[in-house]
Picture 1 (cartoon, one colour):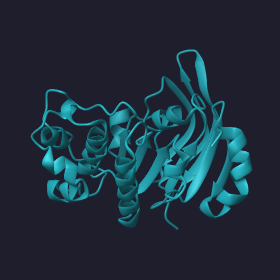
Picture 2: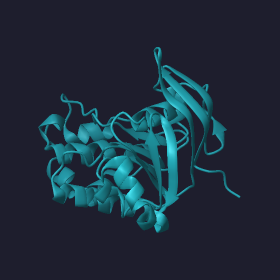
Picture 3: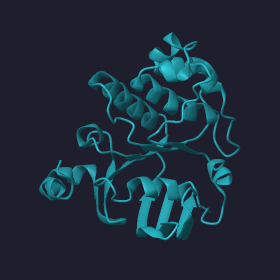
Length: 236
């Protein structure tokens, strides 16, 4: 049986003196879309950052495709085939849209990254704006660029933090189609999302966080029976 794409056991993480994750457990199988739900400050972004080694201190176990990463630096974790899209996107203002796309190197442990032609077919807006300065793109186009840049590297396990936040409905719909396409192509996706209506039809499974710990896990088929609890936990 193949190893999980991501397996977290009893993960604790700190920023300085702040203990932000308290015994997190989580398993993501290859090809799954998994969504982390929770209120602001629940620990969802901290979980993604801890997976990438971007918190101050981590204890516990994080395995990526069976490889223990808890003691590895961020660059070595990324080379196992991970791509992290933070909420702030990280677009370089001095570079054009296409130059931003071409900037990251191929990951040693990833597959073949998408070609520019494949990316432009998935994101026609970026093809139209390829020569525009990166930060002159609209918010939705910048979000597409941030995700597309990861796909160029060959990463097959994607960590996406609030990619739908503040975007027009037509852009949110385009991002939903993108995630469905990536899943069909065998990518594994872990999403942090506040927009429940965006996440609900896309995810295979859900984890709910409160105060830096997982408090609920369920599959898409169980969503309806958990709605009243989700209303209480999330206000959805």
